[in-house]
Amino acid sequence: MANQRPLLQAQKREIVGKKVRKLRREGFIPANIYGKSVISTSIQIKEEDFNPLFKEVGQTGLIDIEINGEKKPVLVQNYHKEPLSRKVLHVNFYQVNLKEKIKSMIPVIMVGIPIAVSEKIGLLLQPISEVEVEALPAELPEKFEINVEHLSEIDDQVTVEDIKAPEGVTIISELSQIVAKIDDLISDETKELIAEEAAAAETATEEENTSGEEEALKTEEVTEEDKKE
Image (cartoon, rainbow, N blue to C red; front, side):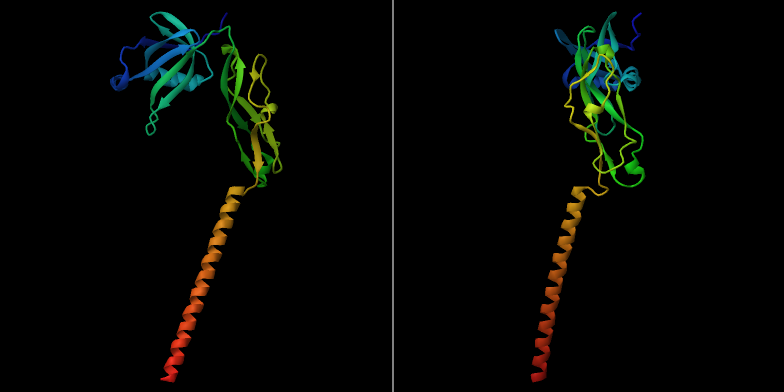
């Protein structure tokens, strides 16, 4: 028996352009469905239905969108949020063929506290937060978890090559990419900034000393003139 996928009800959308603001005020999110050999369809979905569902499945979980009784398997390809309120303004769904492999970005989550961090030897950096994979839509992993507890020295690292993908999933990101790394407690950028500030302070001190010496000389000259008078 096939796994039951989350179901999202949708309606075909006639309203486009700036007029979609009216839809949003009524609690709907304008959206589109597109895909390989698929005619793009404009739809609208209820905000109260989409938000909890998206929180559950993210961008790697399959959803069945139902329009007029017809179900379409889709992934959330991308979405746009209002910067301040973080309200979802628009969603693009990618309709998949369940028998064809697709490429997708999968989040990488760090697990544990590195020895280097707990012993205050260095900082944990995560240069990339997701990797690209290829798999059948139903086999896309929700995330990759990477244990970093063993990282104990400066420059210890985990690369994409160290990620263990489940059967049927191929990682296609560059294997040498660094996923996690232990860096100095003070980064090179911070060191440069400290050096620049120290140099600026030294220059300012030298200028202040020079100015003081010049003022002292002027005072001495004035005193000598007074004596002559």
